[in-house]
Image (cartoon, rainbow, N blue to C red; front, side):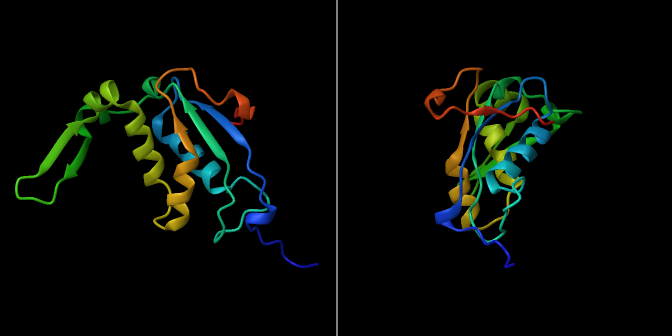
Length: 143
């Protein structure tokens, strides 16, 4: 019997909904990263993009543990002198919780081309409503 190798022709992509309300952002992000990469599938192949579609709802209700709301910063730099911009996570979670969740998920994925393609299958929503009912997503309740 030969080893199964996933490719574009034999990958089945499912849709999953993760509810982040009241859960730590890191745990939700780690689960979403695993689902996007396909690591929870028995036919997982590291060099192939065999992940699923992930919908994260209630991103604004995700919890940052410890003192991260006041001590953690989101930093960007324009490349110019004096171009550093810093935003505390307390402000970021109030204004753009979708960005905070996306950054957490992206940080838990490898730095390669497969990650870039996988992040196109990630959909994050601030509230409890999403617009993907036609795809019949399954609610992930394993953890």
